[in-house]
Length: 222
Length: 84
Image (cartoon, rainbow over all chains, first blue to last red; front, side):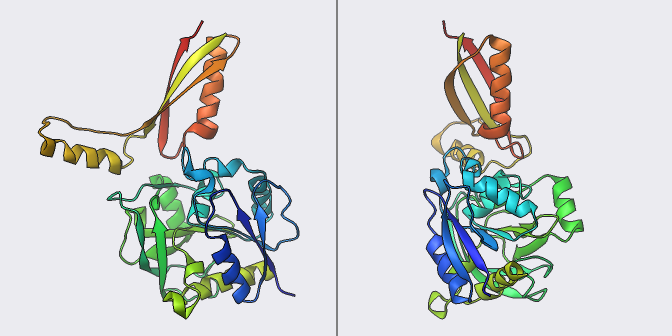
């Protein structure tokens, strides 16, 4: 049976259809879940997509984290099931306390929208299990607040616990340690600023998002 | 009692402030000299009804921790004034 991936939609989300299309093209069932309902249905994995949830008012993710759906996502994540936050979704996961650190305005204050090269640092996560360590993936970024920051202690923990999944080959935004994506201690909650769902068709210029989303779908299956 | 509250949200020391440095770099070009250590924050104003000043302050502190700031990168300074 195909796993079902739920994609949470907030007012201001704008990548939910891309995420839905990408996971469906990889063989998963998928459905959109409105943020105002705490009922996630019987989904096997959850994606929090990119965009500007609640207009990014106050801070990106600050208001979205209090949505009824997020309370269920937090419980879902705590039960060990896979949760993926892409871009604004990553910001929401840090605000919700499911991932450490925070995303700041880019170094240089430019909104960045371009393909970047990422290096896979570990295959031990729900996002990278179907990749090979050292793989170089070309995936687009599209953000103003993607400059990952955290305390020195947190950075040491991320390193020591092998929780940095993806790094930028050529750091575009000032992220500490060139970090593009991380996971939680249990390795089932992942967040990244680049958009794998926008690198899933030759017409889009890259299919390097496939191994990442394929990993996520496979993790949702088990 | 009703109080007027102003919460100043600032980036913690040591956290890079790209907006602050951009403003700082522009000042000499505009003929303003001696401007240093520019930090950009935000100011949030509201009224709060509470039994007394201490209770109001306590509520606002909790509001700041849970919602108005991201404690990973931001601090809050709370100003309270009796409105009545």
